[in-house]
Length: 542
DNA sequence: AAAAAAC
Image (cartoon, rainbow, N blue to C red):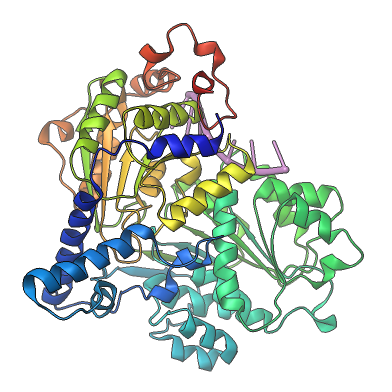
């Protein structure tokens, strides 16, 4: 069965009426409005519609269907029952600031440049007016904490390691200084070859950052490349690689281009590793090393960004940086307090599916993002949800074709996916502004994974909800994750906190626990061999 | 510790 057929099938039989969901949305919106009004220390944390990613998404024109329709029904409801004027719900929302968490910030290093309080202050740094104008037209008003500290540091050409929670605007914090320091699109005087490189762990994230670049690039002929096989090949044509300003790439893609001689990095002045701790993982490290070694420009600036940076990765990072400044926003390795988190006991693996179905039997806030531990389990879970009549279920993992992956992201950005089942590939960096709820169907194996996964909600000052299933098998790591919840202001049952510290042996045992390939083995008795990795839907339905 | 992701 094709992916499209999967989509069609998943549209059948809704468990919730549309109006149910709309009502739920309205309640949520009202709550946040009231919160905004009674909170005295509100900052200007609202998200202007111009800032919305949806309109930059491929094929994603305009706003998401669900939001539009809910605002229409709000309109009608008001006229019919309350006789109020017909002000659009989105205008109402825009006039109210969403409360923003005020973070503690630490900036350490020698001669740390002072932070800025407004984007206007960038004038004194010689930031081109075109850039500040683009900021304004894209709806950016006040810098977030990570932006106000990191932008001056990078503008002063310092190396930087920055740790800031999920959804706090790290991308702009490194892109704005790059555009500013490059000053103008590549010209004969700027040397030959690409001048700035951003390296990220997944293609989806690379694409998202590319879209963000396009916002800042408006009005000038910047040459920005989302690195792929095709764009790399295009560079091999006579001298094309010399007129490039910024490349966004995954590590292996870039290394392949280096080895093919398609590109050299001798003129790179700015190198950014986003999701730095992930990039310094053993599997990525050799490639990162090669990329760094290939950047031979004498005044190369390096900057590392992430929401998490375990001690080991931080040591590696600091050794790669030259007289760095270390900026920490909030508490390291801790989720945002805006995300209300809970742990749900589900006994064993077969009990998870019924638990999830009963979760969907109550009103919920779409879109929901669900994390599974493997590609086949993600596919299989998506199928089970479809077969159980959940509407607009989607699946995304790296076993799909490039096109299938891109289409899934587009549907998500357009609001067509109400339930997205995915793997670790979506855990980091992806900014789906509408995601209200994250469900960890399979228990995350590290604190970093937990923090990044649930960080797909509660972005840019919005509220979010995260539910994590755990079974008896997950016990060895339960306390570790429970402490993360506690640290960020969520509550945890007493008995979990009283658990003994897991022993090394127990942890080793947990590593050996093998979850079934599919979430409902009963459905696949005797047919397990037929499971193919590269398929959005199990062949049993084909 | 293991899966996923990277080509």
